[in-house]
Image 1 (tube, chains in turn orange, green):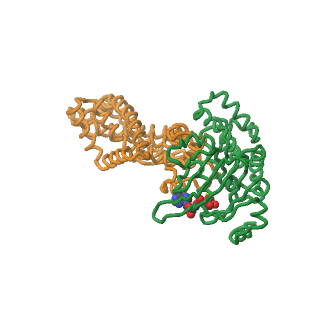
Image 2: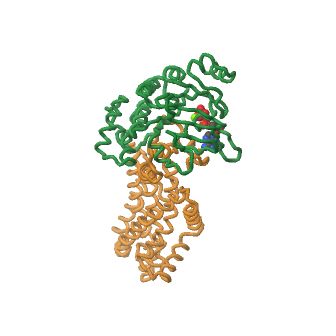
Image 3: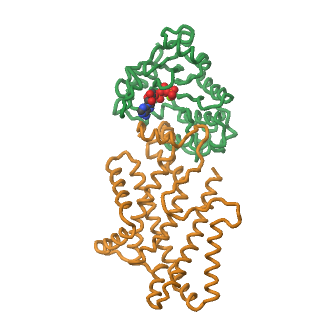
Length: 278
Length: 247
Ligand SMILES: Nc1ncnc2c1ncn2[C@@H]1O[C@H](COP(=O)(O)OP(=O)(O)OP(=O)(O)O)[C@@H](O)[C@H]1O
Ligand SMILES: [Mg+2]
């Protein structure tokens, strides 16, 4: 890698002025995750407007028409823990896969490099829903893994590829001089990765991982079509019993919206803190 | 005769690619123990490439490089052992921004030489004192000026107890008022007997500190000699032209 021309041009792109040491001001956005709210001094910025709107609408429904809505909310909200459980374990899996995949794609090792490349291409080329259902059934048929575990594994495999891309761009955003300085001191490449490159890359990619989490939380609803008793599944079961389709889906949408808005706020705060302490 | 510390013999380096670049052509030079050798020359003349081949940040195409009579250019030489013994200072400092100044200096002894952390930090404090930055031990690189960062980078390289120091344009990224503080540190280092190979455009420093000056142009070593030989009585018209241009 020392003399790779590709890295040279990249480092030129990233570190413009050698005198200004890079701060954590690079953000990599790879996903369709909720936009992280930018600092907006106005009291009614778009995040607040949406969030308040959602809360007020939900409250109004519950207060003025408690008849179906309270019941719907109870039923659907009981899916929240499942949604979170699935998403949290899936993202842990995806981070592990993504770490290997990202390291593989910057590795000089031909085979590792190819494996992670093919994996990423494969995953990116197939619609998420198709992959999820395929992996889910494959897990059931071959390994006899089903239910929550199978959903978690399918999600981890699908999102691992995107996570891998995030890790890769995080690593490549570190100026080439960092690796050079580390190995010039006598470190091995792996020591340099662990002690110098990864700690800096993590700081850069943390907001993207937060974003990815939000997008996974939304997409976990896809798994409900086959396995999970999550928010969406509970809602659809309720519809099957009561035929209150529009009312139920409205509540489902509001629940997802409120959760993702809160999380995106959290990610935004996290990013702000990372940037402020250099 | 003095003992040779670095011996570069007929080194060529070609960068492969769409249009091949012959960055270094048949270069030979020797740096003796305790000597300070300065390489000068126009941009793109291959100075960095030659310097970086000494600690194998670049792999040479042909020729041989010896450090202490060990051929480091041979494929079965342990590069890491060589690099432990050869400190390097870069134009862009390349300090580790996520580590404090003290950690920057002590990380290599701890990770590479497995020296006890306390002991390594005590020694790093000594080195920081030597470069005049003991009070900045707990600061982070982005809280320092360029000159201070480069002095930390020198301390970081010294922490591995190298016998040789390489400098690649250590002051080129600095504002004029900071250049002197870095050159002073280098001058002290030179006086302490360190073997140094330096690429620089600071002709005043070269005159004051160098035992030997080497002029490179388009990949070739055009001439070498004592500072007064090269600066005051340059033999080659290309050297004269370069010196007229820069002085
Ligand atoms: N990684 C690389 N790939 C391809 N060509 C390169 C690479 N690095 C340097 N070169 C080329 O090799 C030649 C010598 O470059 P080098 O950096 O050694 O010059 P230099 O004398 O240090 O110049 P400067 O004073 O600008 O630092 C130049 O033509 C340069 O474009
Ligand atoms: Mg150079």
